[in-house]
Length: 394
Image 1 (cartoon, helix red, strand yellow):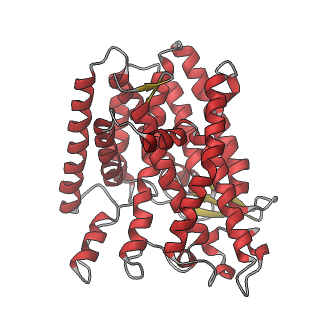
Image 2 (tube, one colour):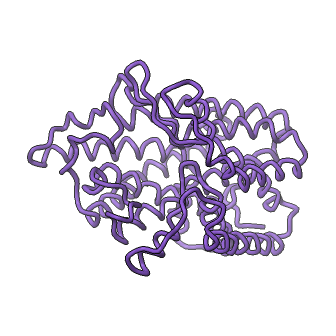
Image 3 (tube, helix red, strand yellow):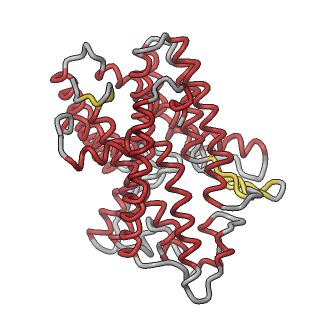
């Protein structure tokens, strides 16, 4: 069996902790890096290798977190009835949607009026959890078929568009197309359309069977290797063909390096089939090869992985506060600009603000280190107070 820490699977916590750490890099870049207010780091006409891969490496975070949330749901279900697990998942999903709409949206803007309503990571996680609450009552073969159809087939919808600042357009955006809307003086951004995210979490739920106590460890690791390698090979073949799997085709660029960047530049909003193959494939290999890892670094990283929602909430507030206070020391900057009225990428007053990429990396490391004691204290509290039901919601 995989290494257990107080009835938890260490390799899962290690992977989740690692992606939580990497995720903070993306948010520090958003709020601190000077180039973030000038251009998209994935824009091959303006970016460089360092900026591109600083952004690209964070592609792993959302899909891996979704997948592992489904796996954790399966493992939680080993101690509950189907009815109990379904109720828990549905209620936790509702709670996550509430957190996104209020707590997280305020963290992004620091504006009490909430002029920007984001439908992004935690919203998609919450809805996916509610969908999973229904799916767990079906046979696992049916759940797996649902996941494959959604993940492999959703790019057939790429040509469908519902333009306009309308309710039908908003409805389609919630399903499969990233869009902005302006209503009642607020900006509504659907950043994480539900398809195919609602297929990723149930896929993780199916994966959870390999971590059951009665499942042979050698067989599990073999399955993870086969599935991970197969996903990477399928990515290469489909991407090279340039026929299906991503709405943006790769193309020859000014040199071989930028052509490679074009090849790797897959679509995240919504996550294409190729995006999911190249992120989940390596994640499965990571799980296969890290079951027996030990040491101080592993113990530190798994702490973040055991309290991911707590970490997620506090790190956004800390990064936004750093950006606000740093602006006090930059000539010509006004800290009030950080009480945002529009998404950070569109706030023209922030052009000229920010620091170089190396400085952003230092701030990222400082943020991750700074939140560690808080995460460790909260983790210990959770482990020693399992009788408190509300802890399972944060």
